Amino acid sequence: MKSVLTNTALHAIGLSKSFTLHTQGGIVLPVFDNIELTVRSGECVCLHGPSGAGKSTLLRSLYANYKPDEGQILLEHGGETIDLLAAEPWEVVEIRRRTIGYVSQFLRVIPRVGALDVVAGPAIANGMPADNAKVLAKTLLTRLRIPERLWSLAPATFSGGEQQRVNIARGFIVDYPVLLLDEPTASLDAANRTTVVELINEAKARGAAIVGIFHDEEVREAVTDTLFEVGNRSAAMVALAEACA
Ligand SMILES: Nc1ncnc2c1ncn2[C@@H]1O[C@H](COP(=O)(O)OP(=O)(O)OP(=O)(O)O)[C@@H](O)[C@H]1O
Image (cartoon, rainbow, N blue to C red; front, side, top):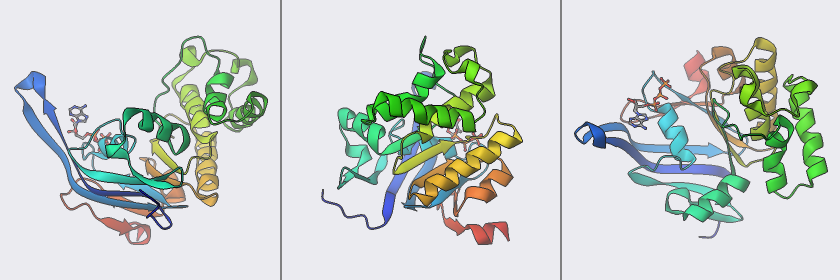
């Protein structure tokens, strides 16, 4: 469909999700119901709620890792508004390449590919010449304090925090219009948390629409514009100012 979202980068309408446990007698676990979520360009929405409320499930649904039972996820992609849930698998691949970035807590390591190439990969896939992509990758790895001696090594043997920082560099190397962040600072020290906050705020300043889960209170307060409560049946938007008052 032609573009219908004005200044809104992502609009989820009527999202409902339950899991059916086929190996456990077909028990149905409802997770969320009738979620309505709007994220504007330059805005960071923090998914908030108790453990088990469904934050990760919602974030994964926004990346089409999980398929909600009902609803639409409208996005601007290639000058058109598309519904991610109705997209063909090849379109989902294309949407992930160009429009939605996702930083999970854990790096899915690619055997034998060095950290520099792991980070440069998404930029090259978006058409950036390899030399330029590697320069950008080096800048990000330096900002995230990955020592140069590790750049050519495959991250499989890196520490948890090092892997997470490689993952963050990989997620921020492309100027995705929509960025999904699942606890990006979970294994990081204070200096690297500060760098991640800077990267998030720089992404917002260039107009990225961000949805994230941030358990660290300082990080949450430094980046969040809007808290989105997950976990009651009528999930509601609560202004950050109210939540922090
Ligand atoms: N793949 C799955 N299959 C079945 N149930 C699942 C699956 N993923 C999540 N769940 C269930 O859905 C509910 C929500 O889980 P989810 O991980 O989204 O919560 P969360 O709010 O992110 O929790 P936390 O803050 O502890 O990470 C939980 O009850 C969980 O057991």
